[in-house]
Length: 272
Length: 189
Image 1 (spheres, rainbow over the protein chains, first blue to last red):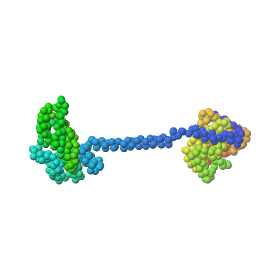
Image 2: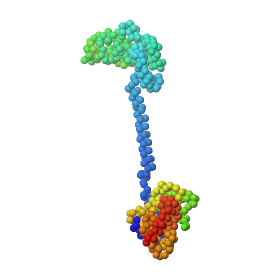
Image 3: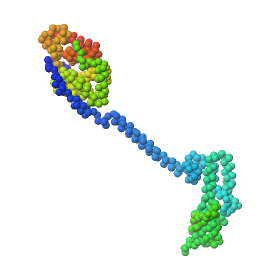
Image 4: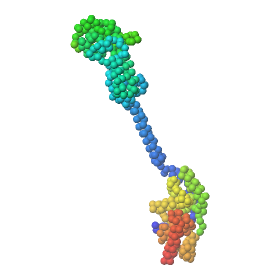
C-alpha cells in the first residue's frame, strides 16, 4: 500500500473534539438493531423444538392411553362367551382374563352342556320320564359324579369350581317354557302331542296355559290347568293345517317356594 | 522510553477490567465504563492513520460497535482489554482503506522524527527530516506500522506485540530490522 499520504505536524485532536465524537447511546442503539430478534436466536429454536417434541410425545401417550380400554372392551365382547362373563362377574366382580377363558374352553368340564344339568329337586314329570325313555340324559347327580371323575382324572384347577356352581344355579332359574325341548319355530304334531307337555329346564311346575288357534273366521282360545294338552286341544290341533301358526299364551308356573310366575308365551309353526 | 499508563495495567486493574467485561457480556449498558476508558486512545490511534476527522469518528464508532456485538466471544488472556480493541481498530482501518472509504495517512511529528534519526545514528537536520519523510513513503506497510507504533506513538515492545499479535521479542527484532533498512536506504539516497 504505497498510496499513502504523509502529514507533517498535523494538530492533535483536542479534548473537545474527542468528546464530540463520543456517543455511547448511539452504539447501544445500533447494537440493539443489529442484534438478532429473539425468534432467530439459538435458544429460541432449542426451546421451541423441545416443547414441540414434548407436545407430540404427550399427545401420542394420551392417544395410546385412550385407545387401550377400547381394546380391552373389544376382547371381552368378542372372545369371551357371554355366559362365562356373567358367571365370573357374579362371583369375582372382576373381568375374566383371556387366559382363564382359554383354559376353560380347553378343559373337559366345559364339554358338559348346560342342557345336561337338571334341577336338584324334581318339580315336573320331566326327570322321571327322561329316565325311563331311551334318550335318557344324565341327571344332575350323574353329571356331578361325572364332573368329579373328570375333575380328579384330568386335574382341573379348583378355581373353576365356583363357575360350575353358578351354572347349576343358573339352570335352576331357567324359566323358558318348551314343548319337546323346543321353545319356538317349527314343530311336528307328534312332538306337540308328546306326553311331556309344556316343561321348563328350571325348578318350575307349569300350572296353567292357554292354546290360541287362529283361523279364517277368527281366533279360539283353549285353557288348561296343568302342563299337558287336553283332548279338546288335541282335536282342535288336528284340524289345524300345515304351515299354520299356533300360540301358547298365559303360561303360568309355580316355583319351589310356591310363588306363582308368568312365563314367556310360545309360538310354533305346524309342520305336518 | 515512557510507557502508556492507560494501556499498561497492574493485576488488580486487569481484574477490575475483567469485571466490567462480564457486566458488558450480561448487559450492553455495562459496556459504558470500557467505552469511556478506551474511546480516546482508540480514536487517536485511528486518527493517526486517516486523513479526515469524521472518518476517524466513524471508524471509532464501528470499532466499539463491533466490540459490543462480539463481547460474548471475548476471552481474557491476561492482557489489557485495549489490545483486543486495537486489533479490531486495525482490522476496521484496513477494511476502510480497501473499501476506499478512507485514505491511508502517515502523520509525522517532527519532534518525534528526531528519535528515529537518533536511532539511525544520523545527524538531526532539516534535510535529514525531509529525507526521512521520503524514506517512510518507500517503506512497506508493516514497516510503516512499526515506525508509527514504536517512534511516533511511543509504545512499548510489549504493547506493540499485543497490537500486532506477535511476541515482544519479535516486535523488538522487527523494529531493529526497520531501522537497519531505513539506515541503508538513507545511505543510498
